[in-house]
Image 1 (cartoon, rainbow over the protein chains, first blue to last red):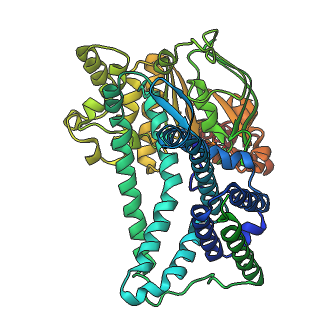
Image 2: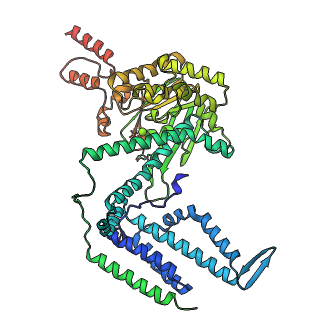
Image 3: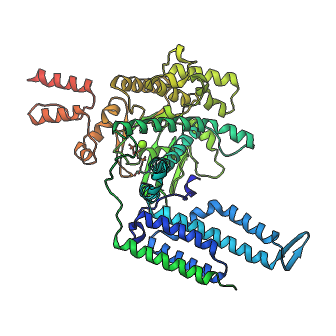
Length: 267
Length: 283
Ligand SMILES: Nc1ncnc2c1ncn2[C@@H]1O[C@H](COP(=O)(O)OP(=O)(O)OP(=O)(O)O)[C@@H](O)[C@H]1O
Ligand SMILES: [Mg+2]
């Protein structure tokens, strides 16, 4: 049951997208997301979709794997589309009972649906092709200038990388404890809502204890290796732009210009 | 015939790039009342195998029978199965959650629908069986030592009165004295109650002194299955799998090579002593 959560997961393989500098991928993802909100017509979405498709092909991540993460937001997607479909005023094309479907509604619902799917796919493509460590390294580098105004950039990115690293560990731990309690005939799947919540206690207590124990161990290990924050800390693998990264930036720029120019034409 | 595995295969993360065959064509018969050791290198599939036996994992293919009933059947009562095939996980102390030991041990029996009184009776018996002193009964499990916590956790499974008790590396992370105590307790339990016991371990030494049958796992397959003497006679192959026969096996082999007339198939220290004395007398 926990297996379906692929959001924020990393997919280990070799690909041009995996090799790119994380900064490029972060910038690209942001550019892509912003571009989605600038687009006003379907041709724009077509271009965005094409761009996404090329990226997926370049990433070597199986399409099935990418869309498995979509299951988690399926409900949200349907809800958004339904609301847009029924609640947009305009020219009525179809009506029954108290509900009306308008031309504008159909258009908006479709746009919202596409936008949401693209948004999730785009951002999960980033996390699928970048290790959490690389991701936070890139973020730290990108946000570096903010240090001048006393934003604790290093600490924030360190916290983020630890949090990301702990997700799979805690998931594994949950699975283990759940099985151990099920071996003692614990029931996590049936009963009323209140009973089910109560039944979670044998799972949650050991989980919290283990999370604290792990956090404690980690803090100790970090101190044992003389960690004292970001000042003067050097990197074993500093991020350096390669030729391919500049090419990638160029491609992104091209894409953004294209989408903004074509996507904003009135239909 | 208590547990029967028929050509069981299991693949983790099936149909992804990370697919990993953890069990390959495993067929086993586990009759009532045996004391069995499962041995294998890290990652050989021991934990995966035992989780099949109480239905926590369903096989990718193959069948598993408990008392002639197919446990993969949709309407098979899994809860009942888990009470009858008790499974103690690796580091079981990580599953404790109640405010005191006694309540924690009551958790299993209560899930079976027993009344408060019956559950407490079972818990008391189980805690006595694992040899926990009375003064710890009403302490928080988190204030106990590692070995004591482990006893409480084992009692938590014992309290369900299982017919088969499976323990996954019950001695991991304990000092030699703690190990001996836990193993002694388990063999005592076997002797007194006659329940089937399956003991998973890395270490031949742990197992050699106690069990009557050894199953050796290697990369998801059952490689050897037989009496300790028979299994340890393959000590060369065992070494190739990253395992080792007990020290006495090596000792006896070297004595034999040095020209002494000793039986090399002995497995325990006591047998070895008698054998060496016998050879010594003959000289
Ligand atoms: N939850 C899981 N998801 C994916 N793969 C797993 C999982 N659990 C185990 N495996 C894999 O299955 C194989 C067998 O693992 P298993 O835990 O059964 O080994 P083991 O013999 O118990 O090892 P150990 O002695 O270290 O406990 C290993 O290759 C392991 O990587
Ligand atoms: Mg194991």
